[in-house]
Length: 249
Image (cartoon, one colour):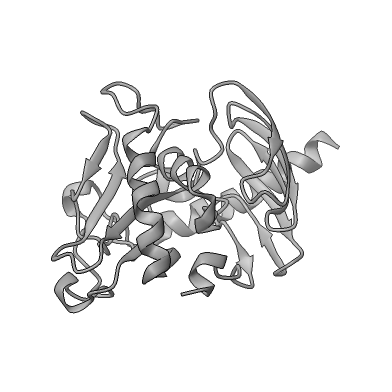
């Protein structure tokens, strides 16, 4: 039984590692392309307020297993976008360190949530408050594993603003980190979760489906939108439904 469980976690990861090694990946951050993919218009050309949550596969060995996530905001009639990340050097919380829709280690970002108009206007003050209140914002607080890291940051914002109705993908390692044991509602509010420091845990919910977490790696099944959740891949199957906030744009 133990061998079967380990195989479920490790075999997808091994395949992902082989594909990663065979691909053309930057040797270091200096060699990577961090430029905009051009998906967002100039802020002045988009007068409505807008909120986005994005993820991009990271580089090096972390690229085998994980994505990096960030938040992008624009108030109504603002002349610029604001991007918020957490990084592993200096003060963790950074504003506008990269283009709002920039590649991450050369990998194009994927949109997790996208809300515009009056709905975004209502959410932005709450999101800014969550960013200001982030618990691990001091130099030295960042830990690549099990967290707090960039995905811990974005997950904490999403929990603080449940109206966004958005969840990070299963390969956003660090999203489940909490300081200690947690038993309670899942992030979507449609199920339950039990976790210890984000290192081991289980979730069951209508939105999350069933997820098992071992050392931050997630295996799961989404029944609502049929898909497998596998270490290194995140999700294989139908895309998740858009968030309720985005659907109401």
